[in-house]
Length: 306
Ligand SMILES: [Zn+2]
Image (cartoon, rainbow, N blue to C red; front, top):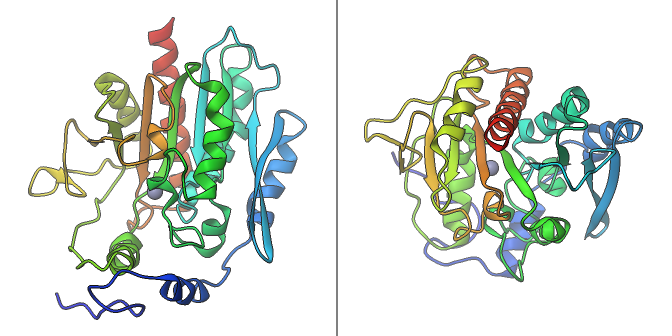
């Protein structure tokens, strides 16, 4: 398939500040973090501890970042971290995380400590984009001296929890726009050719190749299969260019890639990938898939931990 060159930059040359500014100027605000996310968080204050953990300043805009945690945090209990909106455009990650604590947070009181960071990248949420305003992907930036404020702020929030998390589940989507917009943008930014790929049709998980937990991953797949279909392997036995290690599961070296799922040392950690663009998918179903994944992850880890 012939592709027109990406409208910003010169093919074969990576972007400088001018190209990044041109790209940023083409990203209008398309929805409101304040209306969609902060309002929901406000309503959670009655039942949970709501903490502002940082503020991102992208003048003239400011984005306070919030985490929601169990009221009676008890160091004797296992702790579970749920992150959403590390990629702000992946809508069900944000709203799935909020739904999880709103509808099910109380179920875990006295059994686990729950920490939810529902919208790590609010600028990307509003622009329906993968990057932050500096054309940086926060989900490749979880490492020391991170250039992404989104990632640095979350790592600072998590630093005191080192060695204390049993589960970390990072909620994502893989969308058709990954292929039509975000991969071409990435290739253009880095001055590389676009390698065409396929978007998996269905839900899948990305486990950490440095911490494989096959039964944990399969317990999540089994639960989500009751909500939405699981992505089948492509003709190469792969999903999104990586070999399938078990039905619906691929592995990445999460820490090496600077992924959020590698930002903790939780024994049970994974990244969900909901597919929102299928003919059968609805926003409600995508949120429900995220919630089912988190609940199954917690149930499995608690059973194993007991
Ligand atoms: Zn993502």
